[in-house]
Image (cartoon, rainbow, N blue to C red; front, top):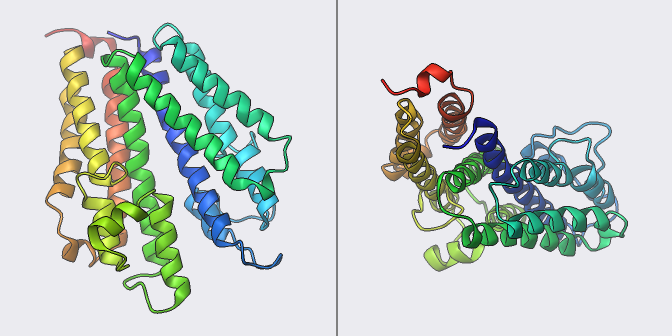
Length: 315
């Protein structure tokens, strides 16, 4: 059985890396959409909001300022650099539990991102995004191939997919608030729905499933309820449930069933969800997913990380 501090570090490694990937994807897509704008045509308010960075006087509305704030500013806890640094620090604390290849990859990502700050990345944002995304994907692949799929690996899985489920639901919620029920005939509206799919790496997969007919209901259905697409909320919920079930079996923790039941309830609500009902109140439904992910996080902590020693003893 892993120590609580080890479980906590592994859980947050994958949460931080997933958060960094989510942020850099949003930046890459938003800058790509603004390539035809004039120097005064940028508006990143929605991006700052989606990353829980509400617009403020010191949040720049130009590409260079955006990258400095959301990618490189280590004092901003939600920035890509801060997330990668935190993930690396957690990995450093559990070197004995991860493989040398995993440590090498996360350390290389940290160093490459640090070196990238000296370049003129405002004109090469796409290359910066690929550096981060490819680095995180390499870490995940190395993890799957070089780390035993035991207790530690399961904490990495829970962290990744809890973060992914809540981030995808929050992003979809924001889009519905900006454009409630229809994609609209205006080109700008359709571009924003395409941007949502691109931000989740879902455009090609969506088009294969539904063709290029951009309907908010279908987009929500795909990102919420699709059982096969890796970045859908339902897929993430299934992986959370599976990982927590495995942890319960591996640790034989008496209280382990609570977190698993919460994850199972989330998965069941998505598995039996009806889009007609969801679209009656999309904000309430999507906000509920975020709350449910927070409950899973809390139950995980109470069961495996901050538990009282008496609760871990056999009856």
